[in-house]
Image (cartoon, rainbow, N blue to C red; front, side, top):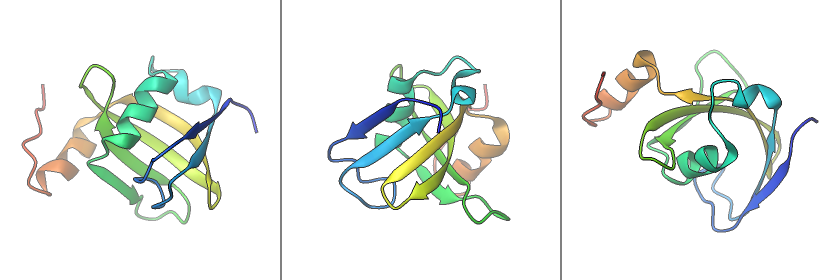
Length: 108
């Protein structure tokens, strides 16, 4: 796999584990989001779910280091390794998921 490894202590959002190894695919950075922003979004996840129609493609919606909502997509390599392959400002379609859960999502 291509990317850097990062262990997060006390990280519970992803797979309900305490420590997760994150492998960052270079494609995850093409929209200007960095590793720290992805990690922040995972820790503050409002949504962490399997994407409908996929067996191993997950969506996280959480806050980056500046408090902006971002979307992160990953797949599991094994039970404690996640391959992060997409991260960007949260798009409208995904913000609608938040509204459906009672959050007041801003569409600006």
